[in-house]
Amino acid sequence: MSKKIILHVGSGKAGSTSIQRALLENREKNSDVFGYPVIDNSPGNQVLRFAFCDSSDTPINVKEKYRKNNEENYTEYQDSIKNTFASQSTGYDTLILSSEFWFISSDLEVVNLKNFLKSLGFEEIHILMYLRDPAKYYLSSAQQALKNQSRISQPSNFRYHMLEAIKSWSLMNPASFTVREFERSTLVNSDVVSDFHNYLGGLGIPSHLSLRKTLNETMSAEATQALQDLFMHIDTLNEEDRDESRSKYSNSIKHLIQSGGGVGTKPELRNDIKEFIDASYLQELTIINKLFGLFKEKLDSINNTTCLPPKKVVNFFDVISSYDETVYNNIKDTLFKG
Image (cartoon, rainbow, N blue to C red):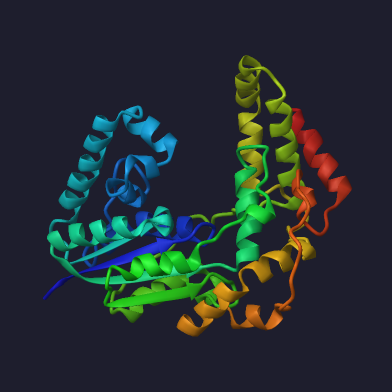
């Protein structure tokens, strides 16, 4: 019997963290059925990608964190990832891997990973990918970035390479390639962990998957803007004062992010920005719909018209349709008090 491996290729802001947390928290319970390797003190095996990509394609923070951006040492780091993975895969006929980093893997990376997995005896490969409505993905990724910086990404520069990722991962020649829509109305029990559990069951893999604590990743519009305001303030300071301010406000920032800001408005993308992104991705969504039957409701709602790029945005409030000024001021006042 050939050994089996399931690759969850997570795109950003599509439930990858929840899936990885569930796999990690239930690792021992599932160990009689499948392995979930944990590499390099990460909550899983996300960093496996970096064992197969060029140093030039690896984020600077990763290189600096592990091997001080030294090319020779980085090669050693890559080898250590492979060795750790090979060691942790020993004794398992089924493995589950999950990484959002894989979504931007090059063709060569995918082929090299495939050859590596096959060298370990994993001949039967199954791929699962979750894709998100591009307009919702833009809003969520912009909001995520503002949890750690003041700069917001421009809608006109937004890129979400769905078809490119599908094409690259098809080079795995998988036994099955499943693409699902990350949308509450289409997920099993409106939950990505339940949906992933359902997917594994369809492959004949029983699993225990649950989270001790539900992740709250969505902040209110008012909390997001208040946080951006704080980072804008910190950016105006000199380097020494910036470090001091980051330290001073660290607990307040952490509490705000974890709480989601408490009361407030759920962010909704401004209509003209939504229409621009919808129009930009109409062709790609249409192709994905024909291949996998996804985004039907989305496609039915898109007006096939030419949309001009939105004007430059500076604040989070520039990209959303509504917010409560009083709630915003209260959150900002509390946050700035540290």
